[in-house]
Length: 289
Image (tube, rainbow, N blue to C red; front, top):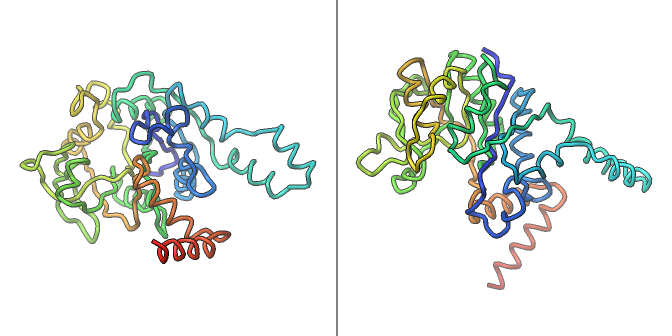
């Protein structure tokens, strides 16, 4: 199996980042010099993805505009001799084949994925959640793609989280296959303490077979009154092989203020143009606290 398509669910309302997200899509909030969704798309492209579907809502047309050409801006930059800036502006439009579909009702992640059925067709595909920025030497999605292509099955990206934190995610029943690789036997969304199976949780990256769509189409609402992708995967692992891969890399949750600020600082510290300034700035601040 070859994975050439990806879905980026980005239809959430961004309520954890208000008031900034009242009029600005949370995916367009800048991380140093790029909007957060650009890091997601760059990861997909670096993982061999060619076609990307972004699931949005009616308030997020700014994303569509950002990944389009801007002739007026490009012309003005060119007249001013700013050809490097022209390249930067055009590069965002040429990164990949990017398509959009709206999730007309807020029915959960499972419903958002189901909306992509006609785009995906009968192919395996990747899912990259818009809130999750990954920092890894090898793109996390590529790590999952390699396992999926080797074992010809769905793969979810997991890491261990604390018992306190797992209630915000899901818990997985797993059996070891090899280092970092596990077969998934059960999944529970937002588990109560007595439901926790393991301390592994899915953190924002998936490679799935099209078999998930038939399940999601008739899946009833679960936790929070929404159609949960986790519930669909729990059924899928009873029908076909689903694996978990303990991916190598750091995950940032940019959907909340602390996670957002953490990734901004960390990425600024590695940015080739401002890293030295940022280090001096932080050092000076720390010394004067």
